[in-house]
Length: 367
Ligand SMILES: Cc1ncc(COP(=O)(O)O)c(C=O)c1O
Image 1 (cartoon, rainbow, N blue to C red):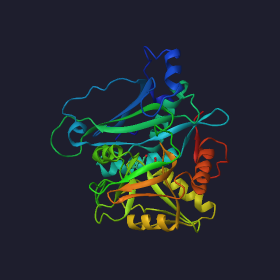
Image 2 (image 1 turned 90 degrees about the vertical axis):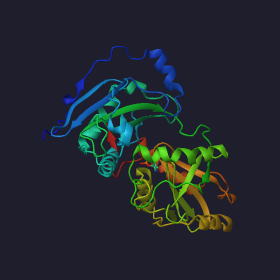
Image 3 (image 1 turned 135 degrees about the vertical axis):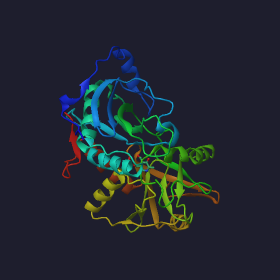
Image 4 (image 1 turned 60 degrees about the horizontal axis):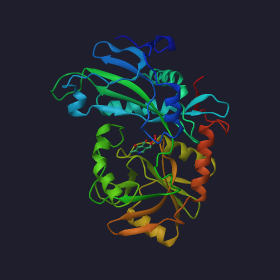
């Protein structure tokens, strides 16, 4: 099978006939919000059985032409990633742990019976796009270029089996704050009626189907005035798992931290993993243990729990202020950002922005 050449010059460049004019672009990137504005280009790589990955190219971002029988449209054979390009203090563009995203992408591919993409190809595809669209970097304070690599099954076939043709694509979206309100703390709704992922399911994979299934519980949370939905485990409806798009941490009065363990039903967040490392480096005890929702409420009431925060690429580190469920509502600590949350957030952000020394080799400079 042909191996994919991933040297920068192996990406064919398709010239853009009509990029967005500079004045419109400047307006779009001044306050882009999240996920609404898109850059001029996209990367595409094709795969087919017997040939492997081929034809890497970067060209204008444009609608896809798909056969209506494409497997992705019927059986949701689709996976994606989410990561950001940051601007370092010296003006260089950089990615944060893109190798971890590449590995998780392949773990998702394995679970969805899709082909693996070589890690170097994943990173090179992103590098090509960020450098082509660097003028799209948002001017808003704290902005970044959000990158969305994804893979879809394109074979036209209605039988239920893994497809024999796929497309890998990367698009980019200038982004500001994830939360509309830019609130100092989020309020979450713990779902009683819905679960996100069961043991043996696809909870650890970043596949579109997981998110489709979370839309109704998320809408329920929003309709009750909350920012995010929090899922409990599917087997017992007892243990806290994660939010719709973020992992959770709990900080206790003895200085220790707890986060739900990776057992196949929650997404192994790269922010989660980075924070565990940074906290342990500081000498904090971090336990990866199940945490019952009743215990959470009791610990918040007794004052044993002093902070809780959500984390992820989009939301970075965001304090959880209030928690509501069918049984009522409770507040954590002061209801706003606590010291540990703030300190860990600052540590992470200063690494991502090239302010702190990158001792762990997490920052990949792109130019
Ligand atoms: C369900 C879910 N959990 C957790 C995360 C956090 O993962 P990461 O830190 O890699 O962004 C995300 C998203 O990005 C997510 O969609």
